[in-house]
Length: 571
Ligand SMILES: Nc1ncnc2c1ncn2[C@@H]1O[C@H](COP(=O)(O)OP(=O)(O)O)[C@@H](O)[C@H]1O
Ligand SMILES: [Mg+2]
Image 1 (cartoon, protein in one colour):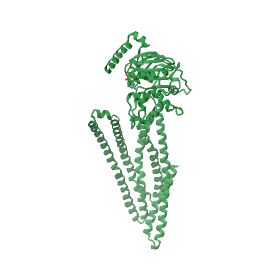
Image 2 (cartoon, rainbow, N blue to C red):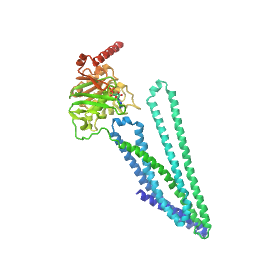
Image 3 (tube, protein in one colour):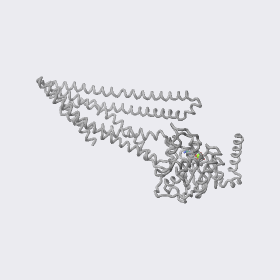
């Protein structure tokens, strides 16, 4: 449709210079003064009608081609976003946020520029060139060839200038995002910045970045400044050639070139200027779009490492087992889990104890299938984890990760995050879990209670408060598998005891995995597994491990001593 509209619009357009030529020839031939008005009215009237026709179809052209390119952009953005949601843990470790953002915004818009304006100008040039050339050659082929000769040179020059401009504007954009990241970091770290009197240091650094930005922008402005003069110069050359050669030909009594023809030619040459310039511009646009599409495809072609092939409903009963599981991080080559085996039966509580870096969180990531083990297998109710419907399994688990993440949203919505749309959870239920995690008494004192917005422009909570809201988010799902990853580290031992006590009912009924580096939080577990450098070094109940007098007993004694010191200091 767009192509048809372009043809229609240009059909009107190419007639317009002819009318001006005719008018000129009227003057040349001479006319009766009383005819002046009717000539002006007829030629002028047709000219206006032609330009209205041209305008209407130009409007439709943009309404089709540009609108379609926006729809394609919309689809492409959704496609990239959907792919982002499919991709897993290691993909996000490999690529930084800036890169992910760029591909969904900048690169997609480069592709759109090609599909919209790129296609439109290319079709426009072809149609306009064919029509104009036919009309001009009809008057004089020789004059046509001479006057159009400088235009391809212009295309080439514009291509060179545009490519340079694209390269430079990418540089400018890159520097722009560096500045944004820098500024954003100063805002989020403002209290550290102030506490360390970092203001002047940051000001200098900002100045430097801004200076680089200015430099890069100046380069762009310089190239940009070349753009119009190049075009204007070459139009000038073409116009002079037309008038000179046309004039010489018109003087020759044998030729059939009229002054009106020269005027028409000058108009045509000017009409072809933009389309020819756009050849250069579009060429550089296509190159940029191709590079962008390559970058987008690189992400789109990426297959998620973790795939759930089974869509059958999965009802988790409560058994979890690891059999000789090993995992090495591809990014760092760290062998985080080594030949690990353990099992938890329904209703049991297993605790994993180990120093930081011993592989505890990796075990949980493996269990939640953020990535798959290198060796060995994980069994859920006796079935291999990779064979079951992972979404169903995840829905029945409540994971409290070590690093708390709360959304910039109300406390209510943060707690309800893991629930389905149709779940009928009341504020009373939310308050109940917040009481269980011993944080309601804090929230109650906020002016807006559950509606209190967290994060940016909202309330800043303490680390311990955040951890407790994050536990509430897991509990409200009534999980059949509760996983606590060192999630009480920012809470004092006393509060920790209160919370664990409140959780008793949940823990006794369901399978639970508690991870900690603190002996006090896991003493009461059915079984304790001690990890060191990814390997299991001890396993047993609290009493058994104490009797063993190994790593666990040593850690216990040390931490007992620390706790005593702490309470003595308090007294
Ligand atoms: N995404 C990752 N890429 C590379 N190495 C990692 C990654 N996450 C953790 N590690 C490494 O794996 C080891 C175990 O980490 P982790 O399971 O987080 O320990 P823990 O939870 O016991 O503190 C550490 O040495 C850590 O540096
Ligand atoms: Mg950890």
